[in-house]
Image 1 (cartoon, rainbow, N blue to C red):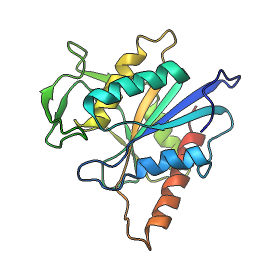
Image 2: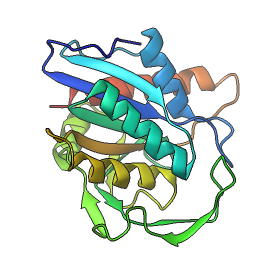
Image 3: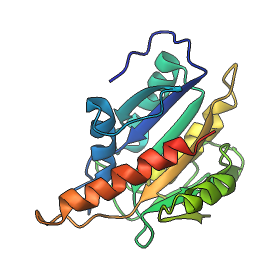
Image 4: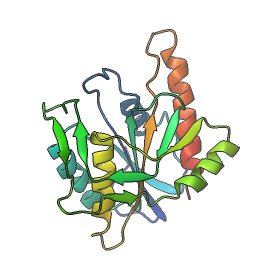
Length: 209
């Protein structure tokens, strides 16, 4: 993992993922973070990168994300979570000010129809140009689509909270969220699945401007 000390590079990129949670005993986004940390997954040299896991907990995720922002002071934030089936990558356009999921977080908390930020806007747009990014990914033959719904669980919570929090920064970071489809985890298939995912993430970061 690279240092969070001041850098001469133009862009400071924070990448986050999640550990396993209810219904997902294997989380491919944890592998993304670990692969960046150990150098298995390469990041373009123009970025000073810091990769970290965030807790799958409504309360703890906010304090940990805020700590990462304060310590690393990123200009870009790419958060990954497992979710949608279908395409390998789903690029999220919106964060919605609502927690509403029947699934408990890893602290056992269930939220129904609860605002993430009291009185905040009903939704906030991603501040990375998702549509332009999608076009560049198509040119690279990456299996990616855009999405207008990040769900109502921790992925959406993080996206909305992160977008809202950016507004109070002296220099607001840009942010979006990327959902990764669940991977086949059988021992004879998982290595190929992870190789495909890592290649897609590398191209995603190469396309990021």
